[in-house]
Image (cartoon, rainbow, N blue to C red; front, top):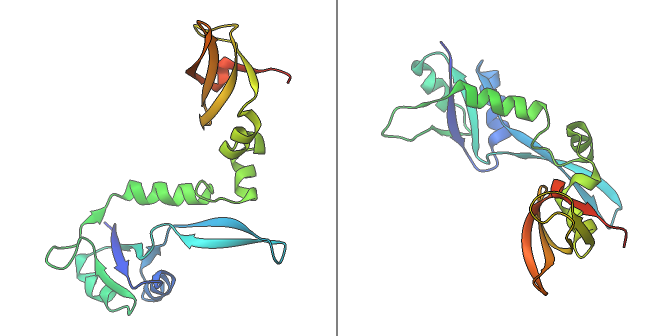
Length: 185
C-alpha cells in the first residue's frame, strides 16, 4: 500500500522538485495558498501563489526501496525525519485533509476565496474592528441584559470587549457578538 512521506527540498526548489518527482513517476503534493496584494503604484491587484510549508512537500511511495529514486532528484535533500533514521510515513488523512482544504480555498486570502467561503466584508476581523470600536451598543442577552455601553475592542469575530457603566464607573466586560445589539449613534 502506498504511503505519504514528507521530504525536504533545496531553498526555493519546491516546485522544481515537484516537477522532477512527477516526471520520475511519483505522486507528489505541494500544499500552496494564494494571497491577493494591491500594488499602489500600478493600481492593480496581484495574486501570488506561495508554498504553505516552504522547503517541504509530500511524496507517495509504495515501497521504501523507492527512496533512492526520490533522492536522485536534484532538488530533494532528504526524506524526513533525517539521515540516521528511516523515513516515517505521514498519516494519509492529514495529507488528504490538506488537499481538501486547498481545493475548498480555505487557506487562500483573495476576494474570490472569501466570497466562496461566504465571508463578507462585514464578517472580517479588520472590518468588524473598524465598524464597532468606540460605537454605542446595548446588551441583548446574558446577565447584563439592557445595559448600554461602548465597544472598547474587538478581540475576535465572536468576542467583544465592552465598557459597561456598572456601579458608577466604566467596567470592561467580554461578551459574545450575539449578546450585543448596535445602537444608532
